[in-house]
Image 1: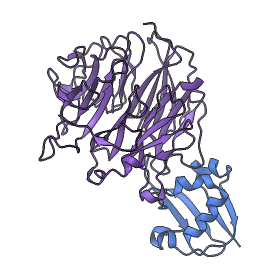
Image 2: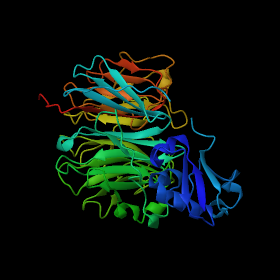
Image 3: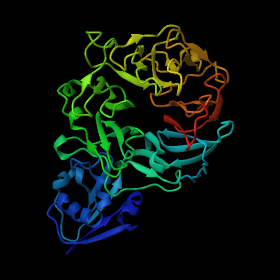
Image 4: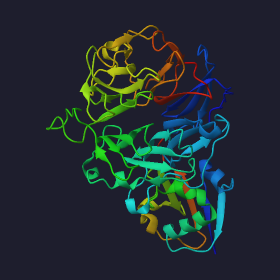
Length: 93
Length: 378
């Protein structure tokens, strides 16, 4: 069992210059899945979530193509083998 | 991403650390300050409200606090004047879980006194003070200020509820002052354990009580290095001087076109000399009459003179923010400021004549001027 995380360009330096990070294990929620990513790539954590554990307001996380904003946030369910994509939101410049 | 250039400073050079809404720049000149070359942009796309230079203990370290709208803010440093920057895995400055809030912005980076060579301070939003005792490796929240009983009545100003000013008394490691918009000034005399407001005489036009104990919207405070009792304060309406280290404030807004403004700098040797850039009003935060004028006092605020030579005096609707005016420590002192329209101006003769050093920068939010390992001649 594994999960695949797709890392956005600005954070790849903090993920060993990888565009994809595959982690072994399964998780019942987005929160637990992200914990597996933090263990593999600790530098990504503070860029994606704040110190109180909330996803930064201009960061989007998609699980199998669906934004977690619409599926329960960090409690969104995660299937075995899911692809989790982290992307900057359409903001900034 | 844009191509980045670097500067190659030498001892005695003057550097301008320029933070903008879309990245940071480093300008370099020799001590004549006649021609400048530019490094950057560093952190393109990120707002850089705070930069600092730490030349203590043999360091040549530039600090910057880039804040990405997407990925948050991380304190970063460079020991080679911008060629390379740290990119720490864990954000060095963050609130403890017990605080229940997240860092929004780093507004000020202040290296400690010469006698505390590994100490640095940061002022942040939401309003709080962080301190490092190991040259910036690790940081901790100042709990005395964070837990101040008046904090729940502090409110955000237009820029957010930020701790933007840190003044370290060179005579005492235990005494320092900070300023928060909108809370006013606070002072500690026990190294940060306890804090008390210090706003006597400072007006709060936006409150029913015009002279409250705290709650003023202090925009900037500067302190003389040679006479630390002397301070000037630019308020949200109001221009003040203190002769007793900030305990009492006297209105000195005579001869200025407006007592509204943000930016302020004080002479490195003369405690009677300071510079400001008045803005028309809080409703129209631009230079009055479309004239870009720096005002200077040389008599502790008894009078102020417009310094305009070389500055546009027609259709110049500029805004100079609270940290975007600075002076270097040379003799005569250089004075520099950046505008929200992306212009950078400098004077190598204390404001008598100005030159435009850059145009077309992103909106400038901070300017720091430093000299590299220079001995003063006086």
